[in-house]
Image (tube, rainbow, N blue to C red; front, side, top):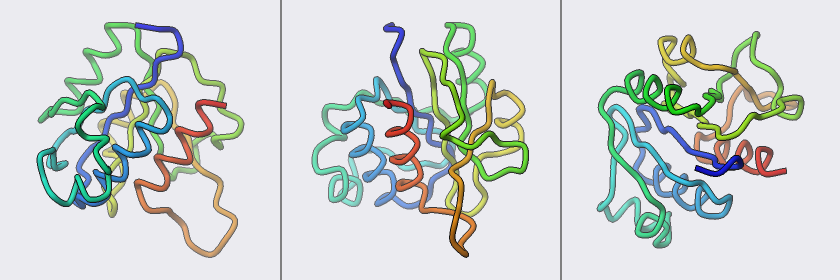
Length: 151
């Protein structure tokens, strides 16, 4: 485990196209491993392949049913947990000072990350929204957050 390792935890993302786009972002930003949790779909699926453009083949990933158990295990290994979520108490992403190794949690397109997982996090971060919309597509948000973590 390297001091700059970034992991991605994807909780309850329904759209397989979003899962594929997340794999592609993970490849671009050097994610060490993706954990697909809850009802998040997993390869091999044509919808994932279509948007991942092959990244699902070489990015290490693992399917987990219970996100909270995975997070407890990662924390025992010294991995910090940051949840990307819209919340009043969330720190704006540009002000976040990550401590590595780090796992970034992204969640459901409609419900976000569950409260149980937010309670386990070391930090909750958000992307500042300047327009009328209150949220971004989960894959787009993951890409923005991963970019910020790498800079």
